[in-house]
Amino acid sequence: MLKLNLQNLTMIDILLCLGLIASVVFLVLLLYKIFNAAARTNFSRQYKITQIPKSVKVQKYNNAKTYYFELNYPFWAVSKEDSTADKRYSNNKIIWKKSFLYVDKNKLSSDYPDDILKVVHLLREVNVHIEPNDLEKAKIARLKEEKELFLRSAKIQEIVNFFSEKPTDFEKFCANLFRKMGYTAELTPPTNDGGYDILLTKENQKTIVECKCYQPKYNIGRPAIQKLVGANQITAADKMIFITTSDFSSGALTYAKETGVDLINGLKLVELLKAQGFYQESKISIAPKEWQLQVRDLRPYIPKDIYDEYFH
Image 1: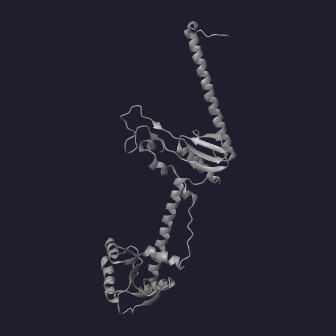
Image 2 (image 1 turned 30 degrees about the vertical axis):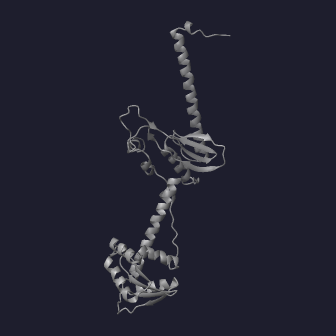
Image 3 (image 1 turned 45 degrees about the vertical axis):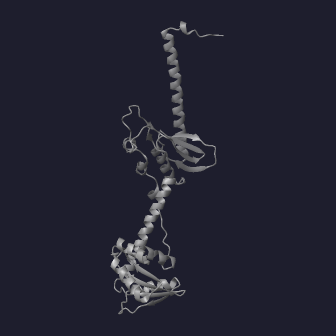
């Protein structure tokens, strides 16, 4: 058996051994890079997309077909309260967590979440369906809420515009709404303002209603609610409702709560109208370019100093 006697090795022999080891390591790393480059190229060709970033590693994934991605974000080993680097530690470093993308039977990974996001965008551009991740789902929900609010606001303005020349007709409109809801609705004479506009009856309960058709930006104050409460001193109804196309001041909201007045502002009015079939349900469309995550959407999840250096 050949035994290596280290004592007989010269400095030249040691250097040659180290050089050989370094060459083997270099060759392994080179082959690894070549293999990864080839895997990236094959993946790009398979899905007919441009070359994906060099940081992305492509591996075969033998599980069932999947199309989703997971983003993880870098952070400092030691950070301050604002998540930026604590510079008191000279050996402080960034911890890079891998992000993943699963496509069919391929698993893509990278330390850089923005590079995974780039591949997601490339695939979606050629109609490969990648499921929205949690942040995108939250973005879709927020956009839907904003668009629904816009549609409701637009309808409020339509109501105001329609009744602008005959505000008293708004009272008839509200009476019809309550009739749809199962009430018997009686309008008070327009020349005899007793502090309310409609008397409702349902199941032996009486309700008085005051109606005001104002511009959406107008806030109805406490005095208007007080007037309705005062009117009920005479009528002695079981309930009181104040309905408007606008909104209520904080003072009005507080007083209404104390006195048991139900308030219906413009947004609630549109919801009631929709529920009773006055409006067709508007179909809200949110295009992928609106809800797809962009690099700027990652800012809240990455320390500012890391984001400024690596993600601009």
